[in-house]
Length: 140
Image (cartoon, rainbow, N blue to C red; front, side, top):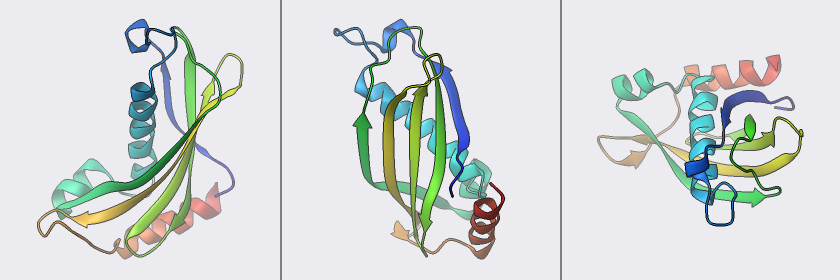
């Protein structure tokens, strides 16, 4: 995907800031996680799909780069894209922007695996999800 989907919009609250006065790292991860679920839903990996099919997703690797501090009151937007989808693995990226300044605040790249929640083992993505990924990749 070259273009990115907007997967999160929100604000930084004072209680999300640390003793340095900027958003604490745990909140970056939390906001990126929320964006991940919106991105996955765009290809059909929705909460109802996970429940009905007894499937799950698990992060295997995350790499975060912090670029600019976000402070209480900052309005943020996360733009996301799927970088790669294999049989059981998906790799995607998020970019968090300060909406007011337009500056990149942080970026995350994640690799995740598709799971059968009964066997607790990895399993292939269904063809329908692979087709949705291909369609999304072409249309945006």
